[in-house]
Amino acid sequence: MEKINISSISYCKIILHAFKYPHCQIKGVLLGKNNSEGFKEVLDVIPALHSALVVPPIEILFIHLDVYCRERHLEIVGLYYAN
Image 1 (tube, rainbow, N blue to C red):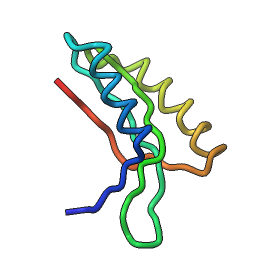
Image 2 (tube, rainbow, N blue to C red):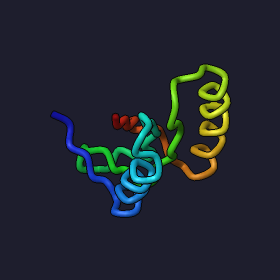
Image 3 (cartoon, rainbow, N blue to C red):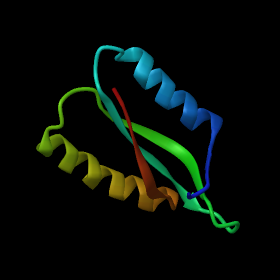
Image 4 (cartoon, helix red, strand yellow):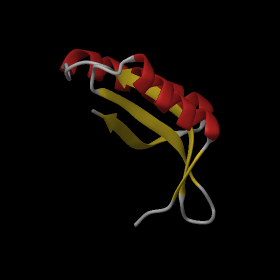
């Protein structure tokens, strides 16, 4: 199993996303880096959806995420989903 370290702010963003939309499925993107000790470090979270998966918004999201990650020297390290 891969080791992951998630920042407190990132964890709070996920929880707040779930609290804001308790009646919906939520999905989001985990951003961070692979650190020198060999595990993923989650430094930021982008809440993405709180409804059914629709392709055009997802495509736009990942286009913007690409630019956002390059500017901040981050990469996508995972996704989150809650029902």
